Image (cartoon, rainbow over all chains, first blue to last red; front, side, top):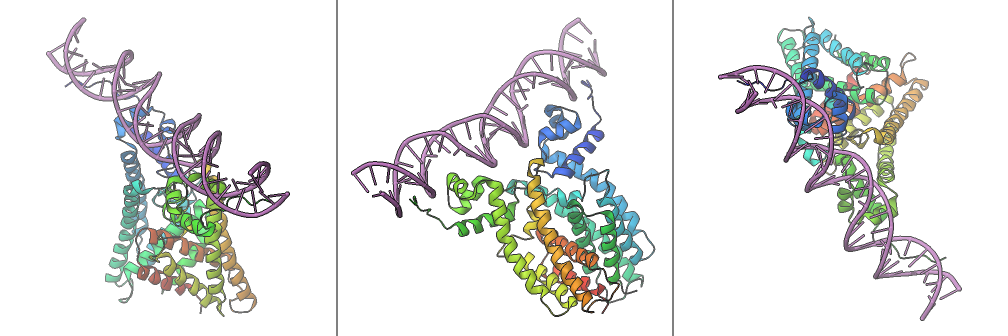
Length: 195
Length: 195
DNA sequence: ATTTATATGTAGTGATCGCTACATAAGTAG
DNA sequence: CTACTTATGTAGCGATCACTACATATAAAT
């Protein structure tokens, strides 16, 4: 059939730029004007390609989630639970203070000034954080089954401890904490390990 | 001199109601309309009594900070550093999930959808979180001086660990974590203690 | 009673929000 | 070429934002 005028920008590239804006300013803090400027396109192009602001956020969030899901899997593939959790925490310290990206984690900073009507954004971010915690929990369950963790260890509680730390590290990073500060937090946090 | 028409509302009571709104929605997420409705006053009364939205937030934040500073001091007055930190973490688990208030901590949730022009709000909240961390650090320094902590303990790093946990717990609470969940995190967190 | 000072209620300011109508440009299909 | 489809650029929509002008109300001071 007829194919119409081709779009003049790369969708994924534009999405990456939108992600940067959402990451730095949060969902509500990022205006369409901020986004179109960063993406190098006009509002009608944005709406034609991505739907609306909420759908754009969802797509940017999925892209972000893809990257971080891979990093998480890599960290969790360490041979022991102890090494896996240490890898998660130290990767967090590193990534959350990466100067090439906004400080902190989109899962935390994205909440922004969400009024009531942005509850779906809150739900999206809650779900992503829960996904992350669940993957850690699964790894710990496996470790317990393999005898890598004692029988009385509680994977769910441990996973929540790790998730709480990474989320707190995001707040710390957004507040100006240095990479070294967060590395030290990660080191301290690992002292709970029975080994 | 002449005293003029007296105001028809209690300033502190109105401030408390504004605090609830900021707490639940964040600085940017709370509209003047939300605030005036909750405070039971009209916009001109709000501006006459509190200046503007930013100054209102600052006053609400100070009020919140007063309450939490007292609670913190009480927790830190425990005889040993270990008990003091445990008290901080368990108080966080309790307070952050208090059903009478919005979930989470204003110091974290207040960041809301802060656009660039709300950087002063970000600074205010960063400063309050830093205050909290510093008080914990002071307590730990005292403990080390008293021999309650080993010579090689690092009060600053420990204080940052505790602050990171409480901030992460705020994110967890805002995401729906239960009091029991957070209590278990606090228990796990205390396992790093050398004792 | 008059003056002075502060608070209130109504109503609306300009600016910005997310979003879109509309005409035009740029491609394919026949 | 004409017909059709899709993207772009301009320009602006109604709604909401933080905030305020203005007239009026209510107190104390003289």
